[in-house]
Length: 327
Image (cartoon, rainbow, N blue to C red):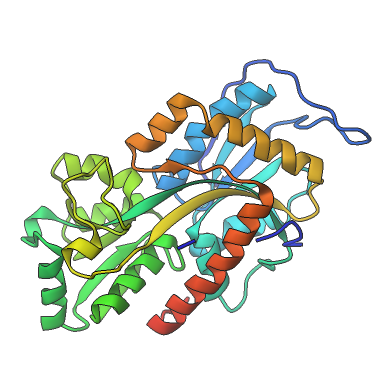
């Protein structure tokens, strides 16, 4: 699964800078001419945060300005979205968006912004499989066993996600619908909290990005029951796909990308997109993303706009069919 030019005190870390030349655009201020703030809708350690912190020092080096990662987890990412929507449209405040951006647009009846009017896309950054996992102590070893348990105990099995409307929430709801099971969604402020409670046995299973799941599965702290994409993840080759394990045809992936306030000058958007693309094509960044199960996918702003608009529609259908609400 997968908006447009014209969409119309967290943990803050400043990344060190190496001097580099800024580019000036005719009739416009040089960009960037001050620190760039990247607002992350989730807690430190979440997949979105990990990827933002991976890119920040490279962009800082390229721009000769600090790149500050600002974690603002709350309300399915809408707090972070509101901060960026209300920021000056000059490219110095950006949203490190993920699938939650599209999910929130479909889920929340009232938002502190207009999703289709108040933002403009910069570029997709990458995509990742989701992992369905459970605590080893629970004794569930396969996805079929989890489905069977849920069928035996309707409404008594719960699953954790990184928040209402998040990509992991939508992935869990799609799994629930596809398997025909009645399980209860438990939203968390971020991925680390959801994983911790699953590992501790307070949650039956979790749907999570593969990025933070890989070391836990490899270390034996989390049992990977399945990945949600059509093909197995190279970083977890022994974990079957959902389609292989139980539900033929199942396919779902999460995505990440950069979003700016609407009315940000097109020249700034293009520079942002081009520079992020250069960083994402660097061999070591490709390798670091791949090592965590993510695939680098830089796009043009227009391509990213179209993808997110489509995602809003698709995720809206899943959430409506599941009966999920923002309550």
